[in-house]
Length: 619
Image (cartoon, rainbow, N blue to C red; front, top):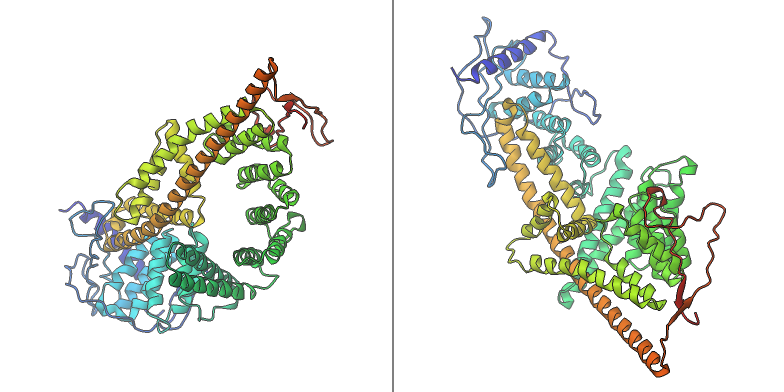
C-alpha cells in the first residue's frame, strides 16, 4: 500500500462528507463568490462557457461506490503543466496527488457543478489551499467547460487569500487576456487594485492597468485608476528620457517626443482627480514631479506646497508622513538648485528626526549651509553622518565637503587628513566597482546577480561594508528598488509553495505556479539588471569624479603650505596662516550648550554644531 493511500482516503472521505451535506432540493440556493468585496459575496448570474481544455485519461476510482442512483462520470486527474526551464526546488517523480469528487449525489445537478459547489464550500470555510486545488482540477477537466470561467476566477481569489499575489495576478491576467467576453472580465479588472494594495511593488500591476486605459471603471475606483494610470505614464516618460541618452539624433527626437506625450497624458489624468479625493495628495505630488521634469519650476513648487498643506497633521485629514516629507525634500532641492539657500535650509529642517529622509536631508542641507557661510552647522551635520550609528551609510561626498571647509579656513592639516581618509576608504571601493563592471557579463540578469549576492553576503571587512553601502545606494534608485522588492516577494512565494502540505506541494497546480513564477522572475531580473548596470556605472563615475576632486584639494593644500613655508623662510621665522576666531557658546531658549567630548548619544544626533575656534587671518 502506498504511503499516500491512507492520507488520500481521509481527504476523499472528508470531501464526500462535505458534498453530502447539501440537500438535492436546494438547487437554486447556490453560494457564489463572484464580486469585489474581500468577504464572501454572491451573484446569481450564470457564467458563460469557457475554452475547452485538452482531453486527459480517466483515472481509477478510489472512493466507495455511490448510492443506488445513476452517478456522473468521475473527474479526470489533474494534468501537470510542463516543467519550467529551471526549478528552484526538485520536484518528485511520483504522480501528483489529486482531489476526487466521486461518491456524491447528483440529483438535479450536473457532476461538474457539484464539483464546483464542493470547492466553493471549501472556499467559504476558508480552506483556500484545498479550494484552489479543487478549482484547478475543474479547469483541467475538458468536460467541465461550462464551469471553467467561474473556477478560474475563484482560483485567482483563492491564491490571493493565500498571500500568493504574483500567482493570483497571473490568473487574473489570463482572464483579462480573453477580453470583455469573459463573464468575470470586469470583476477581474477590479481585483488588480486589491493586488496593487498588497504587493510590495505597484509597478507589477501598472502594466496590466495600462492595457485597459479605455475601459470605464466603477466610480469608487475611478480616482485610484486615474492616479495609477498617470503613474504608469510618468514612469514610461522617464524611461524614454533615459533611453534618449547616447543614441543618434533621430532616435533621440523620437524618444523625447514620446516622453512628452506620456507626461502630457499623466497630467491630463491627474487633473481629473478631485481635490476631496484621498488620492489628491498623491496626484499633486506626481503632478509636481511631472512639472519639474518639464522645466516648469514655479508650478512644481506650488504643487509640492499643496501636498505639504494637505498632509499637515494639525488639520486632522489624510495622514501620509512619508509623502509629506518627500514633498518637503523636493521643495528644498528646487530652491537649492536656484540658489535660494535660505529657503532650502528651512525646508530641509522640516524633516523629522529619525525619519526615512532624515540623514539625506542632513547631508543635502550641509551644502546649503556651506553656501550661506554657516560652516559650523555644515560640519555639525557631518559629525552626525559619521557617527558609529550610521557607519554603513554611504555619503562619500560629505568628506569632500569637510575638506573644502577646512581648506577655506586655512586648516590645512585637518583638510589633508580628511582627503587621505577619503582615498583610503573609497579608492578600494572604486577599484572593486571597476572589477565588477569589467566582468564579461552575457545577460542583464548577471548585473542584478551582483546586487542579489550582496544582499545575501554577511561577510565583514571594510570593503564589503562599502559594497553594502553601494547596494543601499543602488537600491535608492526607485525603479531598481521596486523591481528588487518584487523579486524578493516572488522568491518568497516560491519558498512558500515548497513549505505547504504535500497535497498542495506535489500537485499539478503547484507545478504550473512554479513554472509561471520562474518565468516572471526571469523577466523581472532582466529589467532589474538593466537598472543595476546603469546605477553601478553611475556610482563608478561619481567616485572617479570625487577622487579627482579630492586630489585637486590635496594639490591646493600643497600649494598653500608651500606659500606659508616660503613666507616663513623669507622672514626668518615661522609664519602661521591662522589666528583665533571670536566665537560664542550662546544658544536660543530651546537648546542647551553641551560640549562634545568624543561620545555619541542618540538624543544628540542632528543637533551638533562644530565651533570653529581658529582659521584664516583677516577673515
